[in-house]
Length: 58
Image (cartoon, rainbow, N blue to C red; front, top):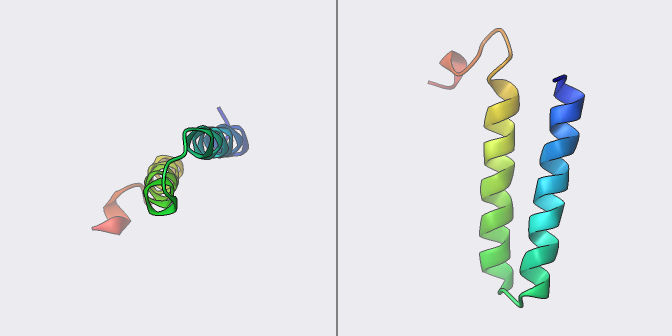
């Protein structure tokens, strides 16, 4: 799967989670925490396939 496809999939997951949290009436700080956590997971997942991999983050 290409990086563009994976990026779009992560974007869909993040937007979907934000919509679900809003419909459930979660507080803004809680929603922000979940969205930022998913964004961090997406960034780590997308960076794992670069030549640097996870080694450059240490």
